[in-house]
Length: 235
Image: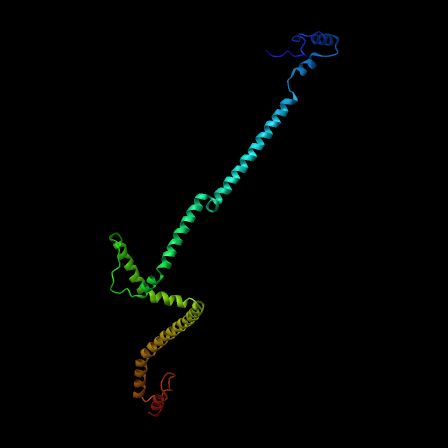
C-alpha cells in the first residue's frame, strides 16, 4: 500500500489532518499551497540521476580508453604482437640457417662459380620448360638491344648538351629553309624573265632583218649586245 501523505487532510490518519483542515478553514493556508506540497520532486531523485550520469560518463571514458589502446595495439601489431614476432623470428632463423649453409659450402661454391658452365645441362623440371622458352626469347631480344640501351645510358649525362645542339641545328635548318624558299622564288622569277626575253627575240630579229633590207640604222636596244649594235651601225 502506498504511504499516506501527511499534508493531505483526507488521507492523514493522525492529528495533522484536522489541524491542516482548521488552517484551511481559517484562511492561513490555501488548498493550492497544499496541492503544491503534494508534488513528489525530492532532491534525492536529482542526486541519483546525477550519480547515474557520472557513472555513465566514467564508463564511456573507460571504453574510449580501451578503444584507443586497441587501435594502438592494431597499429603496432607487426612490432609488438607475439604472432608477428614469432613469424619474424622464424624468417630470421631460416635466413640464418641458409647463410650458415652457404658459409659451410663456400669453397665448393667458389669452385663451382669459377668453373665454366659451357656444354652442361642444367636440371629443370618439365613444368617450367614452357616458361624457360619464353625466358630465352626475352633474353635474346634483350641481348640484341643491349648495345642500344648502353648507348642510351651513356648519353644520359650529355642529354642537356645534345638538346642544345639539336635546338641550334633546328634554328639553322629553319634559316636554310627560308633562304632556299627565297632562292626558289628568285629562280622562278628569272625563268619567267628568260621566257619573256626568248619570246621577244624572234620579233627583234625580224625587225632587224627588215631594217637591214632597207639600210635603216637603229640605236642599240638595252638588251642587245654591243657587238651586234656596232655591226648594225656600220651597215
